[in-house]
Image (cartoon, rainbow, N blue to C red):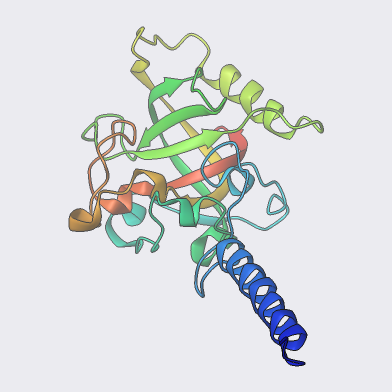
Length: 218
């Protein structure tokens, strides 16, 4: 004999199955509290690295030695969690920094032009600040910065390895950026991973001027 309750039981069981399936799907696609949703950036924090929205902000004067000695590193690391992290803290400010070009690389994999500046022409080679000029935007903004850089360093001898053997003094204007992608592992968060250009291994050396909006005489 079939119980009158069997259809109700079967329907309830199917409802529970559907509920559990939906719950599992939501758990798989919803980020946990404090996490950043996955994103499709072509490179680490690429939208922030190429953002031109702060070009109209009046720049503050900053010194390379001050940046390397006193600017506090952000919490960012190279974890996927931070791939799309928005700008924060000093990264929301535009700065004017004067220094001597000690290294120049125009063929990085992401298309950036990579420069390393030191405060003095004979400062220790690793006491440098990384500055980056992104690929040219449709409005030509970064193209102008690249053209000005070429004009200012024209004639300066550069080795095949990118070393500028007769350093050139110039001024860059752009936003601060903390490149957490090159931070050391959990046991050495106060250091870099050793692949952040030729600058020192302090996590403070991960502060950059990126993107550079203008390159000017000192």
